[in-house]
Image (cartoon, rainbow, N blue to C red; front, side, top):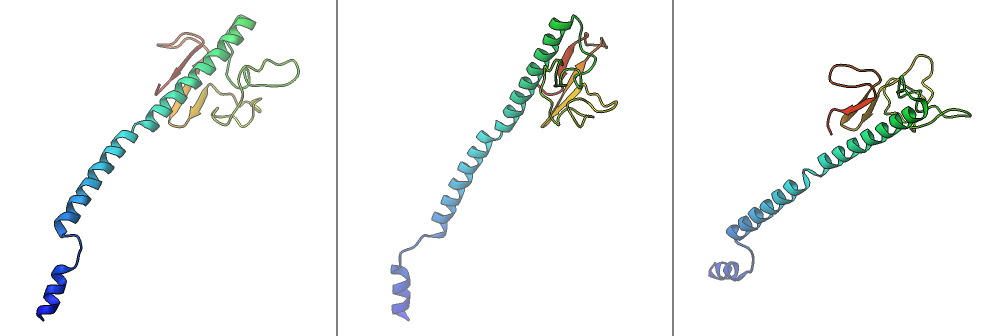
Length: 139
């Protein structure tokens, strides 16, 4: 019996206190990393939103410069491609209410939906916006 007790005391290993200290340190490091990385997606969404607003504003202003008036809708007015058409924006599925670049049938769009934000085009003056304004809900 004495030999077993002596052998158990001589065996190397970590004590409970040592293990708890390591676990606490790892928890603190994990918290620091999560805090530092947490805002990256928010900054990415904001950057994407600002880029979309700028792109749509540029397309609207290019249309205005060529035609002397603001477009009635983003889709199909600015996205329609083909012979003799003015394509100022590339159509994508983010333009709500449309299924193609030419806005089939009566489908038109003044809203572009991104991941986590909406960009709205105001073709006519409304409260708080002038004709041709482009605004977003997040940027």
